[in-house]
Image (cartoon, rainbow, N blue to C red; front, side, top):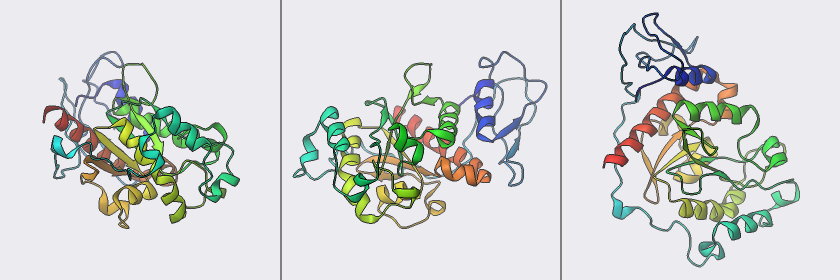
Length: 278
């Protein structure tokens, strides 16, 4: 990838700052600037970019084995065909989520949070559960965590909104209702809500899934391993490549890990580019 000044600005908003050399010039969003040539330091989160006079193609910081998924392996149904959710289209599925009373979360929610974005997106982002702002608005990833996620997406050439030149993604959560006081999801709550997410994945048919946060990662991968041990690898969810990373809410509390998320985003982009030519 070649980074523009606009993308560098988006990285700065994420907390990953590049010291641009004076020899790099050009209008914002037009001239390519430089590659990430060093990992951000744990103290400052700042990466040093060597002076260049011509555009440099960035190399992802993560060197991980990439497992390409054969086309024949994609499209396998992740959902039990006997489930009433298995044949639902988008509108019926949204109505089912809005009226769901499969667990006790229905008694405390204000709004269900279904999902947002391009329903035919190549990229699908899966988070954990709605928080207070999401419960109030019915939209995933709003507030400070949502703003950080939007900056992460824009820096990668993606967006949740329609238009603007970036590629649109689809965003959903493992849970569609907020756990009271933002407590951790209970296993039975994840189990009851899982058919809705599976059907969303089946309807979107994404080329790649980016899983955000421990509960999303562990639910999708059926793993109790911490994110730190699952990062830097390409996993699969019913034939769809999965890259895992930290939740934006976690990054607000632990900004030093923003550089690791950028590595994960670079890996995800590498996987997607490989799928495009594979």
